[in-house]
Length: 259
Image 1 (tube, rainbow, N blue to C red):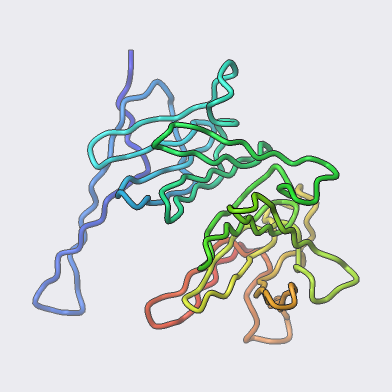
Image 2: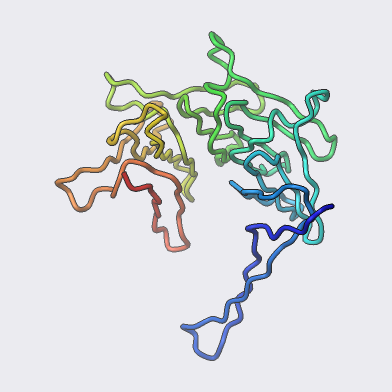
């Protein structure tokens, strides 16, 4: 018998009052019938047609049209399905193509019109391919290239050439990426590419000081690092960067995990 599960998904409505400094907020719970006991959403994006897409932990991806869900899952007998059901991140580009990053299964390109999946997997020795099979963050720059965070460094994917350009950490080069565990990517209003590094899980081979925030210099192909300095109260709080955002006033927000 199917059970009705309340997802961790909410629509927030703001109702302005006479007092401009206060707002009444209401939450609308979105429900969905499923046999699963629990579903954890990991990422969310909106495509140009207004559909919401959600990635999940071990439950595939979901499309929500404001009324109902469509669930896409992996099928061992169908190569035209998700690479795996552990979808770490999801991104809808300007053309409406859905990009899905997986834990240990690479990245997928999904065209909702043709219903076709294209799989990208790490191939040792292929310098033009994706640098790692764990893809944790995806966004798009102002030229339409994908910016991809992986557990093997940062990658820029040129959709026209179909090639990846890799950027990785080098202990001998202070202008290289500060760490190969890229957990967040962001493109600000000026077109600057930012990469937040550092896994909070020490079992990933991370040390307490590994990670950092990186600003990409596309002319020279190198990075400016912003690292935690215990002797500088104006440095970032920790090196485990998890999320990035620029607000309407141009302030840049950096979310991190505590060591």
